[in-house]
Image 1 (cartoon, rainbow, N blue to C red):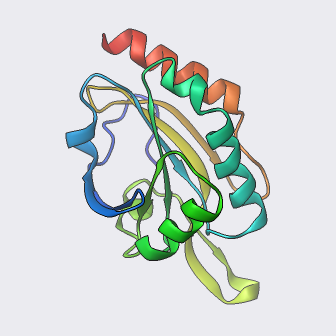
Image 2 (image 1 turned 90 degrees about the vertical axis):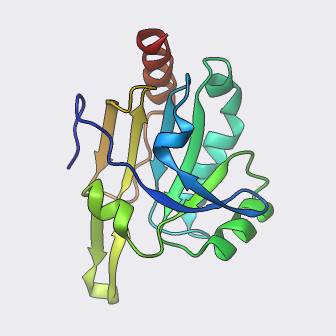
Length: 162
């Protein structure tokens, strides 16, 4: 798994933002930290709660100049519908080919359900230099991140990269 101080693995993937665009991490760092919030699957209980909490707390991230992106293995079409139904105010990255969760080493299985290679619930903050400045990964898909801690980490990444 990538850790604080590591270079963030770069990637290019579809971005569901109401439309469909291509998103490359290194091209979106500029002067602002990027928050990558990995979640197992759209339209599931805790994942919906998590993404809606990020939505509701978006001002905390905008105030420090951070951009938030959700990341899951769902197709970009599914993610656009999930985004629309939950009125999400940030983009969702489709890792349908599972390259991002493999690069960040945040893959998990629900073997008893026959579901494999989903994203663990994880959050990484990447500063404008492409360095991981915050990492949180849960082995329990029912646990949500500490949103205030993530916002504080994004603020700290903004301060160190300016």
